[in-house]
Image (cartoon, rainbow, N blue to C red; front, side, top):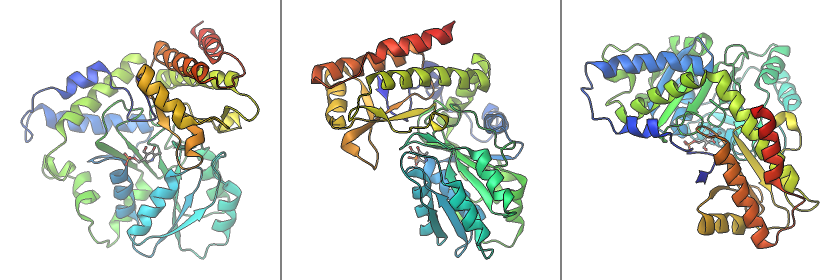
Length: 386
Ligand SMILES: Cc1ncc(COP(=O)(O)O)c(C=O)c1O
């Protein structure tokens, strides 16, 4: 069992879909399927805007967002709440964009007050705000609508760009209702596909940036991708056929479960189970949840601090002795934190099995724990089962 925060477990139906033979890539069902998937993706981000797929990982989606909307010398604010908005900003900086970080810490959401003050003092050079909805390293889930409200409160026209790589298909996300201008994501987490497909959505305001005399930006360029004369232009070349089959099937699975709301509700129940377990294990100076405020905890990933206990040892034992792979601690205290991914194709036996294996390993290490996390998780998940 792999319980890392992406790539997530692949449903059998997705794996089978990927094994389909290669079709004609110029004509026939694949063309229709691609346009259909692009249309269905709008519902996943809850937007009427334009959707794009790119044969890439999440970094490619970041690149597509920046290259099409920013010019060298433009300024962006990257809101820190873990690692990922910072890394996005670093990649923007490599493309010549002036990147300024609004500092945060590893345990809390982005600092909206500091961002607002910076926007108020701006001389008009800030073109975009970059943030993660969920930061996969800290497991914080930010309040995107509150960030939009703060931008509006000072009348600033910066584009709001949100990284939903960890949250899409796991936590409620409403691109249009929350006033997000651009969303990026990727295939390998809540979308239940292997890594290799970047996803980008842009609203009208963002797409209007293209109407200016901008230099074209090659592979990631939106001009042809949005208005293809020939089908291959959607992907700037040969389409990633297996990934398109996979994503179409994953979207079917979401529909079969009852749609995104049902999928979000399942994630909430399983995440509550994980959090109940960690809280039961917690001791002073020992295990604890990395995000103290319950309002900002992700339903896709949980970062767990282990205090004096060595988390690397715990992870290695789980893997070697029981075949359970846990997520590494990221950036801060790597030897004293680990992560449980609970995103995508998961059910109670998978989560309860994961928690029980961690608990057994904690016992084997003689680690101090407050009580049975398995019992707490079973009670929490049981209450939700009704
Ligand atoms: C929130 C977030 N953003 C961006 C990335 C980078 O994605 P990739 O590794 O697919 O390039 C990740 C990867 O885990 C992530 O979790």
